Structure formats: C-alpha cells, structure tokens
Image (cartoon, rainbow, N blue to C red; front, side):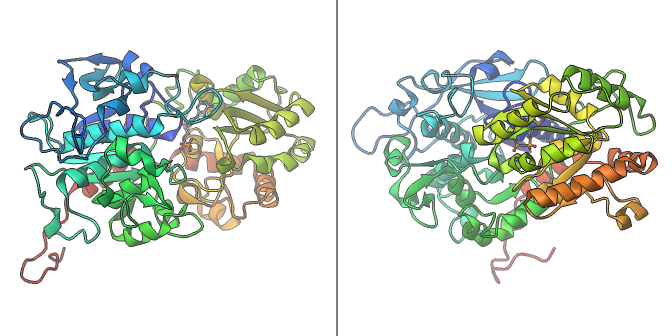
Length: 536
Ligand code: ADP
C-alpha cells in the first residue's frame, strides 16, 4: 500500500510539538508493516538541511485561472478544472516544485515542496519571532495541500498513492482540492459516490486531528488566490462563520478522520471541546477513530538514552537517582534526594494549565517540593512561573526556550511529570514520564485520561496505579493530587512499585500503525441490490 503522509513538521529536523514526533515515528512503523510511505513536507530550511535529494525537481502545476492568463504546465493525464488550485502569484512569484529525497539520518523517503516565495522566511513554520502568524500562512499551507492533492490524483504516474494521509489544519485543503478535482464523498458520502468522477486514480483520504483548537481560519477573500471554488464555500463545506477554515476542509472532505486518543475522539464531538466544530464531528462520528500515539523507543528509552548515563530500567532504578541529582545541580536546585521534584516540558500556553500552579508554589516549597520547568510560550503563563522561580531559588527552576537534550535529562531526573492540561488530545510527556519512571500527575482529559491510572487505594492495591489524576480544572484539585503524590513519595517501597508498573506500560507505535492501516482500508462496497454494506 502506497501512503502519502503529509505534515508540516518532522522530528528531529523541525519540531514545535508532538506533531513532529508523530511524523517521525508513525511512517516507519507503517513501513515495518509493509506500507510504502513517503512524507510530503514544505521545504523549510531546517528540513532541506536534513534531507538528501534524489532525482530531478518536478514542477508543480498551478491552478488554472477562471478566465484569461497562461495555462500552467499540466501533465495530460491530470484534468485541472478552471478555478481550482492556487495561482502562481500566490506562491510569491516563483512556481513551486517537488523534490524527492530521504532523511539523511534515518533514510525515511520524503518529498519536499519547494516554494522560495513561501517557505524561506524565518525559522518557525507558523509565526514570526513575536508570535504573530506569518502573513502568508494561508498560501504556505494551501500549496502544501495542493501538492498533496495533485499527487493523490496521480501527478506521478510511477507512484500513485493509495492513501493521502494529512495531519492537522496545515493539510486540510488537500481534501478540499481533491474533492474539487475529483468530486464525490460529501455530504452523502455514499459508497457509490466514492468512485472518482474525473481521472482514473482515487486515493483514500484520511485526515488526522492532532489539536482541534488550531484551525487555520482565514478571510473569505483568500478563496480567489487559493482557487477554492464557491461550490465548496457553504455550511457542509469549508465555510466557518463566513471564513475559510482549513481544519473544516479536512473534516468535511476526508473519507476517514482519526485523532490521537479514543477519549479525545469522543470529547471533540461535544460543545465543550469541539471548538465550534463539534456539530461537524458528530455528523462524521461514523468515520472518526481515536488511535493513541506511541512512544518512539529509539528516542525515549531510559536504558539507552545518551542524555541519561548510566541508564536505568525498572529492575535497577539506581541510575534514576543519579539523574535526579545531576538535574538538580544543572538547574541550580538544592541537591536534596528527599524533595519531591516535579517537572514540566511544554509549550507554556493556556491549554497546558500551568497557570494553575501559580497560587500553589509557595505552599509546595514550604512542604519541601521542587519544580523544574522547561518551555516557552505566553507571557501570562511564563510570568507567574518566573516570579516564583525568583522568590524560591534552589526550589523552583524555569528554563525558557526549546532544548531537546535538556528535555530528556529533565524527564529522567524528576519524580513527577506534571501535565495539568485544560484539554490534551494525546499528550506525549506523560507517556515519556511513564517510560522513565517519572510518575505523571495529569488532569483527566483526552489522552491523559486514557494513559494514566490514578494512585487511588484500590488501584494501588491491585497494582494498576501509574500516576496521579485530578478532575476539576482548578488549583485546588491539582493541589490535592500533588499532596497525594507527596504522601506516596514518603513511602518509597510503594512509590517504586508504582514506578515499576508505569515503566512496564507499553504504548508502542506498532499498535498505532496497525490501527492506522485498518483505517486506510476502504470499507467494503455496499450491496447494489440493497444498498447496505455486507455484514462483517
Ligand atoms: P503539544 O503537541 O500540544 O505541544 P505534546 O505533549 O503532544 O504537546 O508534545 C510535546 C512535544 O514537544 C514533546 O515531545 C515534548 O518533549 C516537546 N517539547 C515541548 N516543549 C519543549 C521544550 N521547550 N524543549 C524541548 N522539547 C519540548
């Protein structure tokens, strides 16, 4: 099965969050099960630097103008209806092209979309140094979607994907363009309508939501330069309160939707967590799947982590005590093994709930607690943490910035990984915490609820406990969970039993890849006499 996997990020070359980790881990896990996966990415400088190109550049046809203008170069086997697809001018004046290659370090086959007018500005894929979204964000990711759609429609006769699998809003337009090029699916999405109406190749369309809150919503005027026909601009299409929503395009025009945990798959169908798209997701519930992310064992393994030497395992935790002592020294915390050391590795945004810590930290320090935070983000989350670190040197350390190596040392060195999120599609740092015996303290939402079992007395008794779970999004509820963590920490034998159980949990990419392959399979065709699918 040939899979075109479309993403804006790829660890370790370009990462702003979990999306990059997933894009690095899921394709090889799919390949291990026999899939032929190519990852399509914008040629951001960091990605170009880590990719070895092969073959010749392939020019990417632009959309055909509705009236007048030169016809773009289009292979004869692709039919481009007028008015569909971004115009050459929207790429900043230079016609984009595709270049095949492979990630130099891993050998992963990739396709880089080059558009010097779009992808060469700044280091960050989404915003400038002040956190303002790039002015050409719509064009940046419309072209990514367009490239995916053309490949999905058969641009390369030598490699026609069976599946186009797009990730997050950056890839949502791929599905709108495919719909405009090939028709079908929405709103009825009947089996009969699944056959392409134009052209002979029809890839299955799978869209994954990693975070529904980031939607890629733009002014309606972008429709003309991006070549989004009026026929798509309605309630059942990509229109969202009079604007163009890339996320909604992905949700409406895909054959199947996945998200990154079973619980989040349910939550996003509710008004509380649906970010205004819960109605769409309820309508599409029949094709919505929650597939839990995994832990990349090659990257996150306490026994073989170059940042954690000597390594350690569930059978011998002595290396973990050393990792804690080293981390305390590195971050200027008091070298005190008996202090409960909590850690955070995170974007510092409202979503992550770290503002709940503000009112608690004086008390935590008074009770002998320590806190180490690595992250960057919004001033209203950062400032209270910075103030607390200043008030309590030796007890609270705040390291602002992005630092992959320190993230490993921190996850290994702390006793508890804190993830008190308002919402959390899957969450990776609690999974890393489990793997490293750093017990997660989490709020019971999304993937956090799916992966951490609370240290209640009954769970401790039956050996299923793996961390600390609280429910209300409040400082009081977080504090109560922290008090329970502190109490358990004072019972080392019980603490270590929970650590061993946590480290033995298996969140592997092979399981996620198997579930993803099942979604890639088209549903059985309906019985033409009855119109009903065969019983499975
Ligand atoms: P999200 O995708 O919402 O940011 P996840 O928990 O799914 O949250 O993934 C976050 C990923 O980014 C993890 O791999 C985490 O270790 C990493 N990360 C977040 N902030 C930093 C940072 N400041 N330095 C290093 N790694 C970070």
